[in-house]
Structure formats: C-alpha cells, structure tokens
Length: 459
Image 1 (cartoon, rainbow, N blue to C red):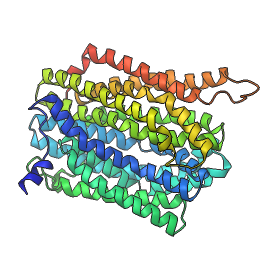
Image 2 (cartoon, helix red, strand yellow; image 1 turned 135 degrees about the vertical axis):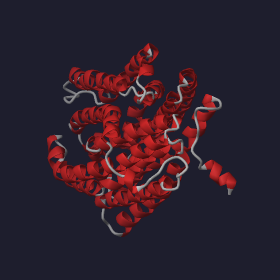
Image 3 (cartoon, rainbow, N blue to C red; image 1 turned 180 degrees about the vertical axis):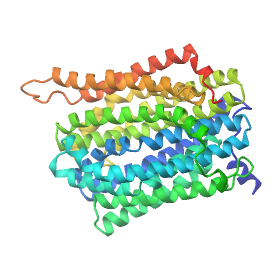
Image 4 (cartoon, rainbow, N blue to C red; image 1 turned 30 degrees about the vertical axis):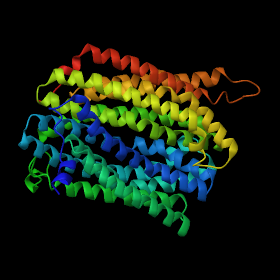
C-alpha cells in the first residue's frame, strides 16, 4: 500500500538528478497524452472502417474548428500549471489553494461561453471554409455534440494541468486510461450497434471526457497535505485571475493562432477534394502520436522549471533544460526511423484504400524529420513558460505560423500550378509545415540563450 502511495505521490523536482526527475515525470504523462490522442484516433478508425472515407474526412475537417474554439481552456490550463508549480516550489499553501479555486470557477465560466457560442457558430464556420457538401452535415453534428459537452473536456484539461503542476502525472494518466477505454467501448456501441455514425463518436468522446474530469476532481480533494479545496477558496481571487490571464493568455493566443492558420490552410486542403482531405486526416492522426513525446517533454519542462524557479534554483533549471532537450531529441530521432520504416502499416489502420494509403505515406515522409526540430522548440519553450515567460513562445509561434507557414503554403501551391496540376502540388502544404518547424527551433534556441525568461517569475 505504501508503494502504491509513493507511485501516485506528487514529485518534488527541486531535488535529485534533473534528467531523472524529468523522465520519471514525463513517462506517465506521455502515456496519458497518447491515451488522450486515442480519443480522436479511435473516432477516425471507427468511422473510417465502419462508415467510410467521407466520414473520416468529416471528423478530420472538424478538428481545426474544435481546436480554435477551446483556446480559453488552453490559456487557463497553462496559467494554472505555471502558478501551481511555482507556488508549490515556494511552499506557499495559501496561494496554491486560491489559485486552484480560481481556476475551477474560471473554467465553469469559459465552458458556458464556448458551449453557447460554438454550438451556434459551427456550421457558418464550416461553410466559410468551403467544406464539401458531401461531409458538411456530418462535420456540423460532430462539432455541436462536442461543444454541448465541452465542460468535460475543459475540466479534464484544467484539472489534469493542476495535477501536473503539483508533480502528479500518474493520477492524470490513470484517469485518462480509464476514460480512453470507455471511449473505445462507447464508440463501437454507438456506431456499430446503434448506427449513429459521426454523431456516435462525438457522443462517446464527450461522455468519456466527462468521466476523466470527475476523476481528476476527486483526486484533488485527496491532496490536503498540499492545499485546501474548501468552499471559501472556490471563487475568483482578483490577483490570481490577473496572473492566470497574464500567464495563460499568450498560450491561448498561441493556440488560437495555430488553429487559425490550420483553418486557413484547411480551406486550401479542401480545394484538393475528399481524397486529399482524408489523407490529411490520416497524416495528422499519425502526426498526433509522433508529436506526443515532444509535447510531453515540453509540459514536463514547464513543471520542472516552474518548481525550480519558485525555489530560486536557476542553475538547476539550466542544467535540466540541457538534459531534457537532449533526451527529447533522441526520442524524436527514434520516432522518425520508425515512421519511415513502418509508416504504411500505420496508414492501413485507418483505411484499406491503396491510393489513400500511398498518398498519406508520401506526405508523412515529408514531415518526419521535422519532429526532431519540434523537440527543441517544445522543451525550450516549456522552460520559458515554466519560468513565467509565456510571451516569447507566443511571438515565436506567431512568426512561424502567420508569417512563414501560411504564406509558404499558398505561395508554393500557386507556384506549382501547371496544366496537369491546375490546383498546384499538394505536397507543398506539408513542405511549408516542415520549414516552419525547422525555423521555429532555430528562433526558440536563440531566445532561450538570451535568458530574459529568468526575470519572469510569479510574484
């Protein structure tokens, strides 16, 4: 029993070997992120195999809009995680309790706003993106169901972010695995047994996310040795709201910018027809798994940097950043080799259409090497965010997506138009993404070396 408690105990990342702390914290979070990615992936596999390629395209086309309209939760989650990790490092129990209570109330308000606005806006946004008539009804129903149940998604992301800020990545993993298993069972039940199609996978995801959120809340009520989750703390504290907004808004804006760029490029993607849309969905699903180690190391570095900055251990932050980046790059290199060697088998999970498998694999080969560059970007950005500097990663994201990726995508497609390819070369969409990743890594490295993030700790 004591051994089990030790596994699920929050990790103090201000002591011990930095690389060990980072790896121990990252592994369960990586498994959890993979499990979370299964939500959308299982949706895609089920509709692709049991409904058809057009249904697969519908689920994928809805993704950018879904990401755009949940940026409020991204901001709250990042702000909460940074504040929680720094206050934990500083051993400030009162501030920690106030931060968590404020986050719970803010999440409820944000959920209500998104549910009302996004449910109404879903179809107009799809029409604006020239979504093909053959899939727009499916896209609309998928989005509306997810937005009606958005509170589950919101609270899971915020509460699991709080748990990670406290150094507890194991609990978030356990609850997400339970929810992922439930999601798979419900997907098969609603789609195969009930014949609900795309609406069925959306309903399954909404229910599963609600379950994971409830389990995270239960876990927080058990951590009384770190903070108090009492009614007097479940309200908006002005100073904490300001800090959450200051720290979280740049990350929310970053997510919004990325989602907007995806929407703009999605319009270009849609112009190539249903087959390319479906191929893009498959590539992005595999990409989602390939990116998981990078995102996991990035989040781990945020918690690591936050706790050590809170404790005033800046030399330890620098040492951990160097070691964490090295490990992340090594893991990404292995993933690139696996994708290049076994990519076709991964594509065949989603569809048995040979043309679609070949097209997807060709696009995946273009992106593969870029994952090493993203490893550098994510880990160093995580360090800067954990220290309280969320503005620098935001500006870097704006430059790489708005000023580099989108113009490159449209420009290269335009320049490759020929009588044989009147729409241009499809591969240019992925070439532009690869180039933006590489430049993003270079720019992030430069700003990390400048060291201004050292002066941004929460007061």
